[in-house]
Structure formats: C-alpha cells, structure tokens
Picture 1 (cartoon, one colour):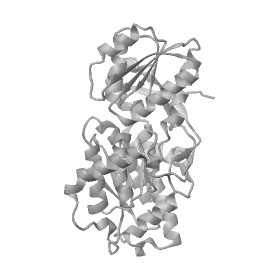
Picture 2 (spheres, one colour; picture 1 turned 60 degrees about the vertical axis):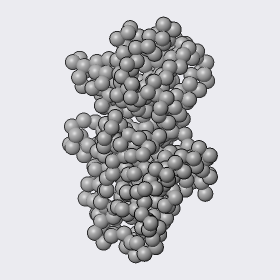
Picture 3 (cartoon, one colour; picture 1 turned 90 degrees about the vertical axis):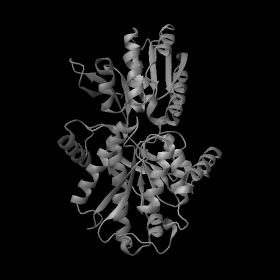
Picture 4 (tube, one colour; picture 1 turned 45 degrees about the vertical axis):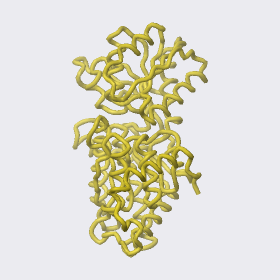
Length: 406
C-alpha cells in the first residue's frame, strides 16, 4: 500500500471537494455497482490536459502524444480487438479547471482511467478526487515531489525532478569547469517550479558552488527587468531558471538583452519546442535535462517518432513522448487484464480497481525506454539525457541538440 496522504494533500483534497460540490449529483455513478463500461465498442480513457490558458502550449503537446498513441494502438488491434476511445476535458491552467475536468471524466464520461493533469499544481488538487472515486490516474507531465504519494490510484510516467534536474547542472559544469557563482530564478506560484528550484539549489550547494541570489517571479509575469538586473549585478557564471515556456523564455530573453553572457540552465518547463518562438535567437545555448530523446533506439520509439514527424513535421518533444507512454501503459495493462479475465464482464468500479493493480505490476517497453512502477506509483526509468537549444541563423527555428553526459 502507498503512504497515507500528507496533511497538505488532505487539506487540498478538502478544498477540492468544496469546489466541485455544486457540480456533483446526489447519485455518484462512479461508485454505482450496477454501472458498466461500454467496452463492446470502445473503452473510454480520459485525457485531462490544458486546452486553454497560458498552459495550453504544454497541454497541446500532451494531446499530440495521446492522439498518436490512440491511432497507433487501435491500428494494432486495441484491447484484444476492442478499440480505445479518448475522452477530452480541458483543465485550463488552474486547480479549479483540473478538478472540474476530473469530475466530468469520472462521473459523466465514466472513463476507466485518466491521463493528466498538465501541471503538478493541478495534480495536488485534482488527483485526490480520482483517489476518492478509485479511478486510476497517470501523470504524463507531473514531476513535483509527492505526486505518487497522493494515493493508491495515482501514478506517473514523468520522472521526478529530483532525478532529472541535477543532470543539467553537471552538464553546464562540464562545458565550463570555472563556474563558481550561481543565480537561481523560479516561479513561486507553481508547485512544480517550487519543487524543482529546491532540487536545483540543493545541487548547487552539493557541488560546492556559491548560490549568490534566489529571485522569484510569477508564471504570469512578462517583465523581469528588476530581477534580471539584480542578478546580473552579482556577476553570476551560471543562471538556473524554473518556469514555464512563456515566462521562462521571456526571462532568458531579458537576461541576454541586459548583457548576461554566461550559461543558462532551464528546468523541465523548457522541454518544449514552443520556447523557440518566445526567446528566438536568444534561446541559443540554453541547457535542459530531459527524460526523452527522439534518437533513443527501440522499435516503439522509432514508430512513435516516425508518426510524430509525419503528423507535425518536427521532432517529438518530451511531454508528447510521456503522454504517448501514459496511454501505452493503460493499453498494455488492459490487454494483459483482458487475457486473465474478460473485462467486458466487469462492472466499472471493478475494472478500474483491477486496471490499477495490473499496471503497477508490469514492465513496459516505451519511447522513454523500459519503465516500471514502484509500489507507490512512481516511474522507474533508466535513461536520461541533456540537450542544448540550438537556433538556426534566422533565429526563428531551433532544435534540441543532445549532449554527452557519460
């Protein structure tokens, strides 16, 4: 069994219930033992990603990934002859949006499991709702500390920031062993970025570097002149930013415009090609650790990459690969479960519970490499990467150029 909910999570869960109380009916179909899934035609799997707000760019990358997965696995026979059907609900960029999306997917759409939400901040509020209704949730882009511990039905395929983030700092030191002074920036209104900056700051200290300043901002900010100037005046050799693509990209741009010439490390929020259009030519050289590489050699990654390139004419980003993987986990767990016991005969609550148990016990060969889950539901992943943003001379298009970290 997983750990009990922390005090913080329990409080967030209570707030979540108050927010959705008016949307709930007197009879909760999710827990109705007579409710069944319509698996004779298609098995519904919920997708809770941001389609609106300042998080929509990241949500779109997740949507791109699951769409490719849906087509890929249905073309291969789906769940032993039965197709899967994705049911989308927009989480927006805040906690209320995620809670409402989960409520609809669970009680109205009657999905067997959910992929999402987009942000860790949203997961802390929405995942307890799925836990209470005993609906499996797989996070595809939730890397903050404590996500899997929310409950027994919560897992993720996105590796913890504690595992991934240190790789980028070590890569920066490999490029410039003379780095001594470090400035850190982070979005204080986002749970993931607050978690990530703690890891970055701990890494800086453990490596014997001098943390000269910690600057805070909001994900909704556009003007970073004051924070950037304060940091530059302290003459850092390295700047580390934990933010999302738009705010983080604008911060990079303004740091460069104000004259900072040292190395910049971006956090997981930079793992999107959408950042190229924000800081454009000034993105060049930013270092980012990743849990996915398009050049990873495996049959399923080759198929995923080929499909993505054909569909979108660009290399697949990390979030798309993780979203594909999350759906793959559901598909293969359902296939395995159906061979043991005909899932068409299971009531919806039974199917959700059996599916959750099945996925936590299997290994999966995915675009991320081989993965499995700890008993708590955290992903076990072996391969990690570091990329450097390389912009074309016109400063419009760019790519992630992978560095050697061996």
